[in-house]
Amino acid sequence: MNVYDKAHELAKAIKGSSEVADITSAMKLVESDPESKRMLENFRNSQMEMQQRMMSGEMPPQEEMEKMEKLFEVLNLNLGIRRLFEAERRLSVVIEDVNKIISESLQHLYGAEG
Image (cartoon, rainbow, N blue to C red; front, side, top):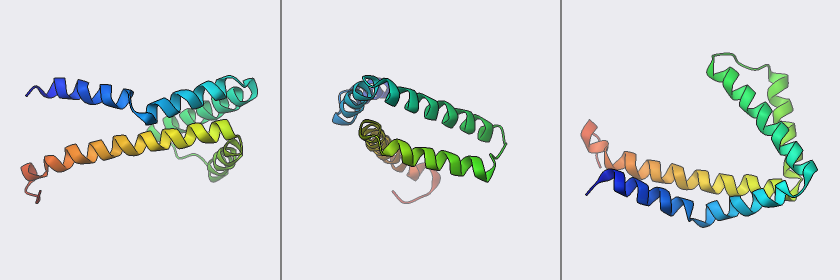
């Protein structure tokens, strides 16, 4: 059994999943509305900047964190964006579950039960 072949099969299965299809259709909906697209892009850019700063060890001020939370709440009022966020969350759960399955299969190497 070739692990890389199985990894490619898994990637193909994820790519063809309903979760990915939901993200694709939600993205099309958001991109069809210029205002929604602009709001989402601004949010993603701010989110990325904040994550990069945190990765470099800089903790953003509390006000900035609260501003991002409020912006997220406002974006969730937009049905298309909320649908996209929910679809992305569902895909994230699938990926986390797959990672957990793989990690648990290797626990015996480190003396854990499994």
